[in-house]
Amino acid sequence: MIGSVLSTETELLALEAASGDRGFLIFKHSTRCPISTQAERLLARYEASADTPELALVKVIESRSLSTLIAERYGVWHESPQLLFIQNGKAVADASHFEVRGETIDAWLAQTKSESLG
Image 1 (spheres, one colour):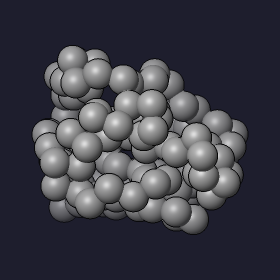
Image 2 (tube, one colour):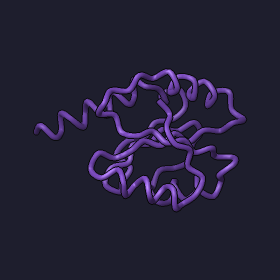
Image 3 (tube, one colour):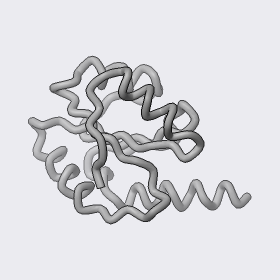
Image 4 (cartoon, helix red, strand yellow):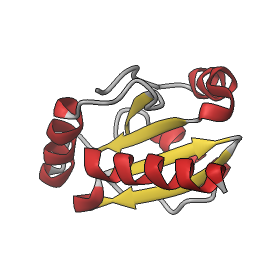
């Protein structure tokens, strides 16, 4: 399910602008960490529904400045692996380590739907 790979601020801002109210997901991945590699495998196998926001990958070692910018921009302490749900320019949910998996995304989307139904 992993989509685009982000490596610059310009790419991040373009994704944020294109995502609208739907939002998007960021997977911050360390290519040196076995836990992160496991999370990457789980997300790659994740079968997203049609309404699942785009999931972008950021390789934290190779794109350290972007990883730092994401932590600062969205106010979420950096961890790796880390999964962020960004909506309307804000981090509305985040998870790290063994919580980085498809079930976490499903739970976030279910919560978002129930909140919008009021």
